[in-house]
Amino acid sequence: MVPDNREEKNALLGQMLTSLEFVANPHILGNEVSKRQISHHLANGGLVLIRDALLESVAERMFACLDQFSAWQVFEDYQTNFHYHHHNIYDGALYPPDLEWCRGIFGSELTKSLMQTLSQRDCSGETVFSASWYLPGDYSLPHDDLPGDEGAYRQVAFVWHLSKSWQPHWGGDLFWCQKNRYITPSFNSLILFNVSPKNSHHVTQVSPFAAAKRLAISGWWTSRTENQVGPGDEVAGSTGEQELLELI
Image (tube, one colour):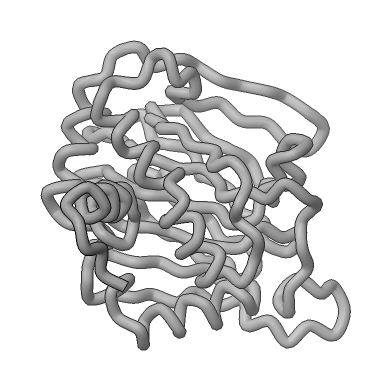
């Protein structure tokens, strides 16, 4: 139903401008065939890689934002069989205006509704959002992203790569454990997958010879209740594909 007054139209336009679908490549998230492919793949435990995922102007805007940011903080932890070391912006009080704008897009109700449709999971909870810069030596050992915080249970993970001219021999790949697949960071590529005990992944160590910045925006769409189980999550008798669906 089309609003019949200016205020309602402006409100609707304001909502659209905060939707991931509005700033995405129209050939992917604006294409019903692609959306059905994504939905089927996510529900069956696979990983989706979308190249040229968002409008080029949006990707360039966010690259410039992260490239100019200087208050990166080191985050590291060392636990049994898992540890990591990387640089992030987690504190929303430090977000520059463009990063706050981007968080609004990924966390909007329209975006959560879109991801709920694509993933076939409840994504109505808080959207966990941050930016990262993996410097030389940074890495993250294998993990499955579970469980999330109470009241913000991780359902769908996203990684939006913003590295420019990244070379495969510099490391920093996202490694998809089930299929032994290395995914080299590339500018404006978006990775999506449903969080599951079977969907382990890690980030390989960045080489000391890396001559570009491994920049990314990442996080999770969450639910207020415990993680759900879908066709690709079953430990026994699963028909999940566990493949990588690449959409260009």
